[in-house]
Length: 445
Image (cartoon, rainbow, N blue to C red):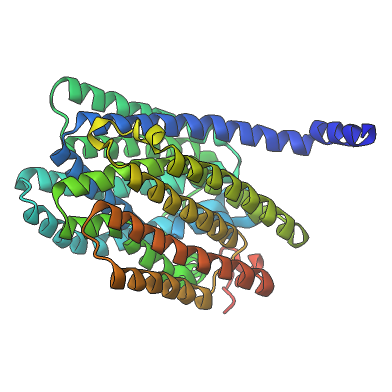
């Protein structure tokens, strides 16, 4: 026992362990504060906005999330994996950022008209005012463009381990949003579109701060490099059907209730979605800590680290899931009196979120090791659609509870495909080798 204690003490004093502990502390402090402020703002909006305004804001947020995923298509997430061990070269990092932003802007131009048609249909169906609906949709497009600045200019900070600066900017943006929304509420000017524009302006502020801070770590060329652009496309292509599918699937529950339900149901689904923010702190850990950590590992270190990461994710999810089923009133206190009757829905919502979170951790690990394949992509799409078809054959999605059950069924299909991808990727190895990723070099086919 004494010898074990000595080894443990020696391990804790090592520079490697101290560095890991510092990263974990900065992450928990920074991401925790950001999410507390964001969660606080979300809960305040539940109380400050009436049911009609909150329904409009929920639909806008759903459009922003879905359109944002379809616009980025995962290109921002390729930077850390493809840069790999060359993160100290500002020219390499800058080349990938320029190519990624070029691809994102092209996709935003393509998808915006389609999203506008769908948004107008929903707005007319629920008789929302034309002016406020127009301003609301424009704020969605602005938010997506500004959030791209956050993703791409934040990547160099994550690569260099500048988590303190990264989260400081997030805190500034979160504090800005809650402060402006508070002023608008006190002046009786808080509506769906003013809230959405406040979010967009907050994203712009964070993007500008990230761009300024990352300047020494990323030298952007004037134009995108065609070979790097092609390589990013080649890397993401096997996962592209996945991303498009889940970009559409991510908010499908909200869209279904928007088409077939009442305004009250839209607000309830949006309110319950706020409980999903409990997992944003954990999900942020994926991109900020887990992905860079897994990407740097040597092959012989990967398996043990994967088991450790997944065990932690499952334990945390199980605890949160138990709270959702056995003490839903604790969580409903966060939503306020207008949504206090949703006790049964809360447990199922948390279960679906837990399953989705564990699946996301698995996909993060796979992405970091470049385990993305056409085979696993179609398995992913097939299992999720299969689970949804079975559900829709049994239930009609026209109540809040049925929408939540639909989400649980979708999450189960997602988990099955994620586990399959993990085993397939570990056995086969990365599809793209790091030596294929050098700027200016021909990409191996």
